[in-house]
Amino acid sequence: MAARIGVVVFPGTNCEYDVVGALEAAGGGGELLWHGDHHLSGVDAVVLPGGFAHGDYLRPGALARFSPIMESVVEFARAGGPVVGICNGFQVLTEAGLLPGALQKNGRLRFLCQAARLTVTSRASVLTAQATVGDELVIPINHFSGNYTCDADTLRQLNDDDRIVLRYVENPNGSLDDIAGIANAAGNVVGLMPHPERASNALLGSEDGLVLLGSLVGAVASVAAA
Amino acid sequence: MRFAARVEVQLRPGIADPEGATIERALPALGFDGVAHMRAGRSFSFEVDAPDEGAARRKATELADRLLANPVIEQSRLELEAL
Image 1 (cartoon, rainbow over the protein chains, first blue to last red):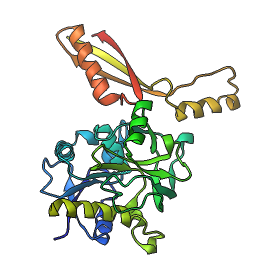
Image 2: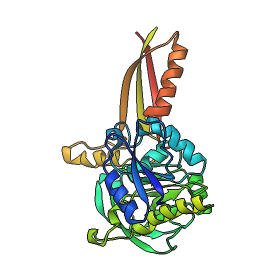
Image 3: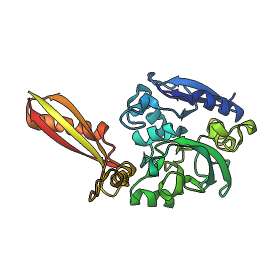
Image 4: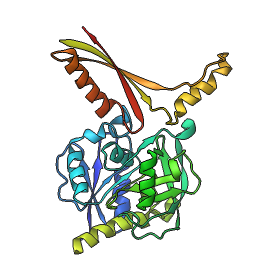
């Protein structure tokens, strides 16, 4: 049976169908979960997709963190369940305290919508387990607040524990240490600003996102087999 | 008792503020010279019911820290006034 991956829809989310389609292309099964529900319907993994949850009012992710479903997402993540936040979903994960640091406005205040070259810098996460360290991936970014920042101690810890999973080859947004994606200490929670679902078919210009989503699907399969 | 609260949220010192920097760069073109260290921020106002000023302050501070500001990058300042 294909991995059941829940894709959470908040009011203002707009990448949910792309993520479901790309997960299917990567061999998994995606299904939508509503932010107002309290349970995860027994899914094997959770994706918080991109968009503008709750209109990005206050700060991106600040209100989504209080959506009813987030209590279950936090509990699921703490129990080791795979959770991936893409773009706005990454912002939600930092606001919810599942990942350290914060995403602030891009340097030079530019909204960025372009293909970004990334380097895989760690395989120690559910999103990069099947990638190769040093591989270059071309995956689109589409954000105004993707400028990752954290304090010096946190940055040292991220580096020491091999938790920076993706870095920009050419830093587009001022992100600290070229960070494009990070994982928690256990590697089961990952946030990234680039959109792997938009690089899931050669017709779209790149299928480099499939190795990431395929890793997530594979992580579920390996948990199920254990 | 009811109190009027005003919370001002700004990026912490040392955190780059691209919005403030952009505003500052625009000033010379408008003829404003000698203006430095521009920082952008937001202000929130609301009313709090509480038995006394201490309780109102605690409630408003918690609200500011948990929601209005992201303590990773921002700091907040509270002003309270009995109505």
